[in-house]
Length: 113
Image 1: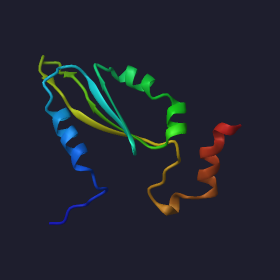
Image 2: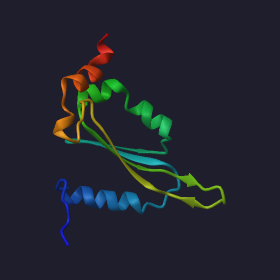
Image 3: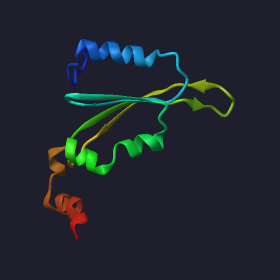
């Protein structure tokens, strides 16, 4: 079978992600990364994470990648720590070139009114 490689990841980042994934702490934590910068935030809630990355941050810095370890309390009392990968970009995105139409662009630019 073939694997799809979306991007190459540096070995030091792979190791950092492995350690992050299997860390012993039980609080929420995030690794926030831009292509040449990385910030680790420990004990950060989803709302605090949102505040840490305000809209102007994205506009100034471009694409941002967040790996977020979330302490999830299940209804039955179990606790798990799902690892979420969040990507944010200040630019418009299309998945199919046929979607790139003048109507689509005008809709996206509607916030300028």
